[in-house]
Length: 68
Image: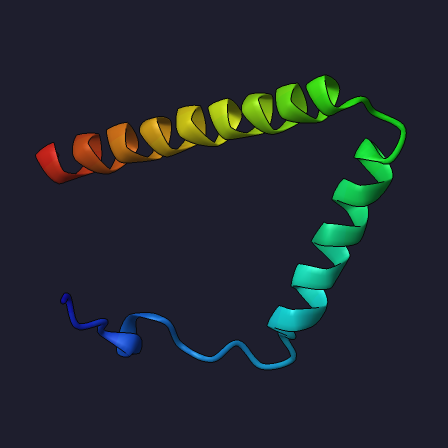
């Protein structure tokens, strides 16, 4: 198992992770409460695709910075 280096994740004063989690869950609930199962599935599929694209763009930017 990989050991996590927690020093890479400093404490952010005033940041409440649980409140953030609950707020995001409430937002997702509001956005999906009137959707069919198929629409909810598509909602999460679209969200995951957007996240994948953002991650790939971020990695490309890091690679470009490393080459300079």
